[in-house]
Image (cartoon, rainbow, N blue to C red):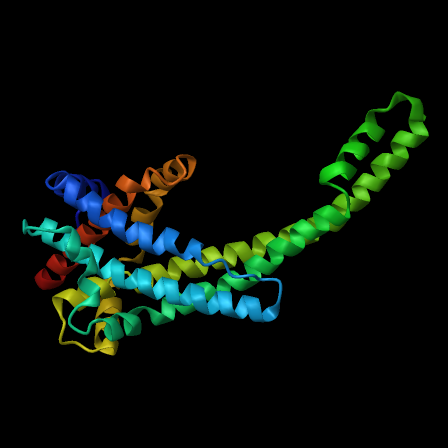
Length: 278
């Protein structure tokens, strides 16, 4: 198989985006605003089990809506790669021609699984912060503890007693912190597996609209066989860009989102080209 390198896929993506930069950014801004910011207009209280349940269902719903927009993004990037004209309205492509049920069928498994593995992370995060507050490592207690340790009046015995108390608190915190990091690692691992496993289904649904949900998922797994490592390395290469977006309060996503999607589109086209050769 003669696969293109990640740098080549990225270079092609940049050229494609710059060929119609205004329209691409406009379309992705619409998608980003609706799927990332609109849900914040509907805050859901989570101080009860029912609240968490409602939040979980709402999060799955938003993830599925985002998947429908994602297909529109895939359509735009496929058109760019094929030198076809694009329009901002193409981002709504997934809402047309009765495609919504199929997109939901293709994306329901990763959306539900990802949201479910987020639950233990959320609970562990809250418990971790609760323990920190209880043992006095935050707020006024932390300040008074620091002053106690450096107070020369208390003498050697006082310092030893303070250090002993601090070590006990840290000893209580460490198992909670390790548990929190453990569920966080599991969440990230599951998210990566789900993204890779279902990474090609929306592209395939555009190229093979007559295939069923099951057939599309199976074909996606087939063409990704032996290519998980390549796609994972491609994902890792975008980490600096996501960090840039984080430090710019999301502003950099104006460029990062279409850049990533266009690169993934070229990855898909490269897969299909080599499948035909094989």
